[in-house]
Image 1 (cartoon, rainbow, N blue to C red):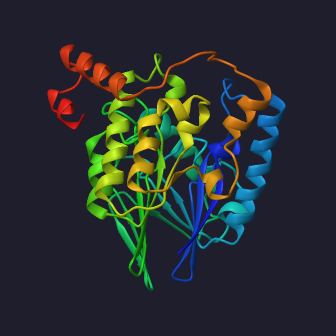
Image 2 (cartoon, rainbow, N blue to C red; image 1 turned 45 degrees about the vertical axis):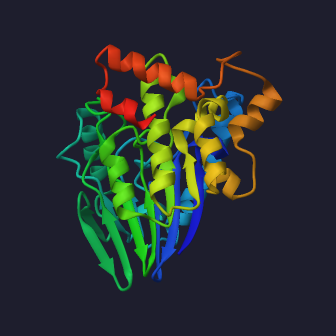
Length: 319
């Protein structure tokens, strides 16, 4: 199975677009892109230019793809345009636009389907289904939370691509594997490779709680320990924050300890993540000082969350 990381946050754009070539088929997952957040340490003009550049790259990959997959309807995961290069003659495998979906995504899904009507060759709902083409198997999870349980961001689908004995999981926007269902899926499927969305640490103290960062760290460590996945590509939301090497310090330390490759999409290409390059060249934007979120910080954060009845005490057993 050949994997191309088409557009990712570590490249300097909001995206998780990936191309798989397996079983004689070319499968493009989440062909969407948007410009980076204001706290990203690149000038607005450069962020806009990168988004335009990678949109063209996505279009070129879509043009040669047989199958397009859309795991949910946020704009960094699909492009709502009547665009023959993107959708003409394709098989579209989609997140259900009517069930297990919040109002915002439902409206976007309806707009998208109306916009591309008549362009794709086939449109199929993918939630919980398995599709087989020759020696290739594409399996979809049931809807998983876009982050923590009950979030108003709705649901996403994870994708399992299997070509013979080789298996890869693309998590989509599970926001750092905070919830047990997403982690259990990966452990149960035991992929050879994993492409995962890291937690949105740029929202810490606002939308994201520190105890959920702690849960994400423990769950990613569990995936590293309990699966054969190597490499593990961790990107997307996490790579919007130039503090990420310190906030996810314990995970990177653990991956080195057990001999697993934990990398960003840009590092798989041999390049430094854009957020670190931008911070080095342009200096800080939102955060000027911070501490490593080390083992003691994780323990203290989880204990406080348990004391405040925010999470069950079982989490303390994972420390």
